[in-house]
Length: 62
Image (cartoon, rainbow, N blue to C red; front, top):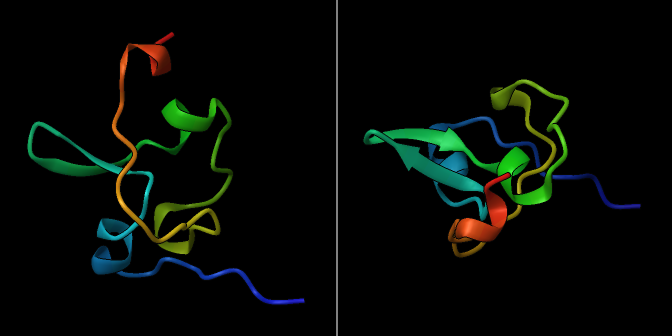
């Protein structure tokens, strides 16, 4: 079984599909996109998924 990548640096977070920005500050949009809590601190994130950012649309807003 392969281990999940743990995002530990700002650069890791920036390359994650779930990353976003609010008022020019980096944030995690995991909860908005998946509608589930991340259940881990940001610097020990196990939900990291490298790729192009997922754009938030009205479908993601509850």
